[in-house]
Image (tube, rainbow, N blue to C red; front, side, top):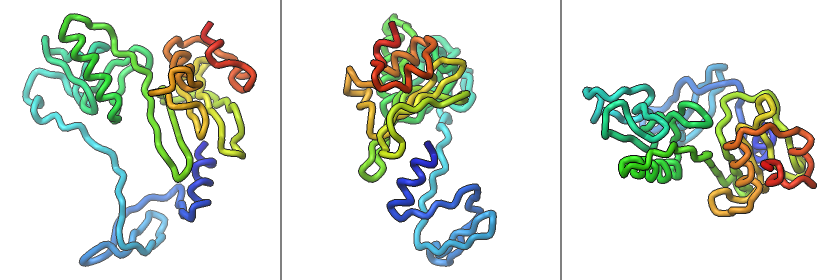
Length: 225
């Protein structure tokens, strides 16, 4: 998958430096050069830094609320302090399918906030949204559903050569996540899309065969039955 995406960027004139990292910048008034650990000196007049975020928990740091990479919450967005809830980027959530994780994505903040509100109103059903993420890369559309920390194999449906395929991340025959490049639909709005079907398979945690996943003739929706 990484090689496919790297090829897309190279085709658009991007030079990728792999297995290296930026260790410093040069320039007096503005940046003029980036320096890498392997000694590369890259001329530039601006730099974009993608370094992640840290959850801001100052408001509750001195309180009894348990903190660990954000505010720890249970399946229903409840903290360890009665009647205190957390949702969104700051919430380190105990997900019923994926285990504990903190998601930095706007649609999770929207959905998790609704789950927290339901719990406040007496409906503490677990928040079990199968997370979805997307990106537009030039003319290409990427969609991803689920959350896979580790996997033992990836099964491909479609053609990597034509940049239209689905990739399924499996662990012991259970689907953990699915990736779509120019294929699979938008799981947020396409109710009958392949990636929406994948969300159901991930939630159900049912074993699926590699052959069925790879075969275009097999309806992904049928694998839940």
